[in-house]
Length: 327
Ligand code: TXA
Ligand code: MG
Image: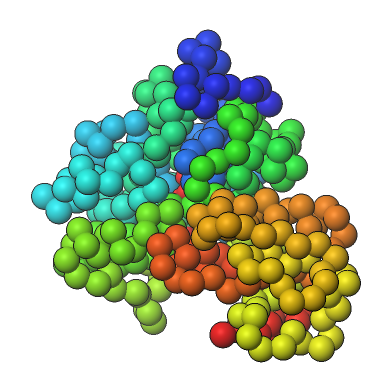
């Protein structure tokens, strides 16, 4: 693990990381959303290492990270709409699923005819992709199913020795993963709410996004798996109903934006939905380390980043261990 300046990354460190990637190694890197686990996206063997190290199901495809919109031309079939979206939202927390060109390895696509592309808004990620001269395959740098890492220590805790280098640029700005939309059909599909608020996209497209259901769900394989879950059971609380009786506040942690009406073993309060989003995964990991028995999460408002926050909290609940109060 090496510290790197998040705003003006040291060229010597970027060169060292790029050399590892070009040799087929793995480098964990910061983005504005969460930390990613990078590999040369055109090297199938390097990409396969990502799946091994994360314990990721083989049928869950990866995002390719770019350092400029033009790099998308050789990887995907672009139309005017796709180019306009990139123009409007890149760099930023928006991933586009597009028809793939043959150069994209099957391992990246997990066999699908499409590819997910994103240009992250982080100087370190951009410098690294530029220096490597390759699109960088990069899932979140957690063990599969765990909360995404929002700092380098979380990457170390999950992947440690199994990564060739971790670039430590401090804590991320957004804290939840990118929004993923599918542009392969006439309608724009929302595959995963994330850092880019849906309201902004709907304004841009002048139409509501479609939420895929039924067979469409197969398009985003990642949504099939239990995700983002800490080892401690998570319960949603809308703060209106009573807490489930079996849940003892003295052994539980509370996180949210409103002061709870009675004592919990640990209370983490955020002053905005943005800071709740930024802190949610780190709080999950901290509560685990502290030996907390149950996590109670205030159900956020769905506006802006709130929709993604709802999605991640919902995904973190484990109905098998405890009945959550789901509003
Ligand atoms: O913010 C982010 O997106 C972070 C940072 C590191 O960039 N990356 C990230 O990657 O969250 P990952 O692999 O954890 O999540 C990628 C999501 C998964 O749900 C995956 O199924 C979906 O994107 N995805 C990737 N390629 C796809 C494709 N061709 N079609 C549909 N969904 C795809
Ligand atoms: Mg992930």
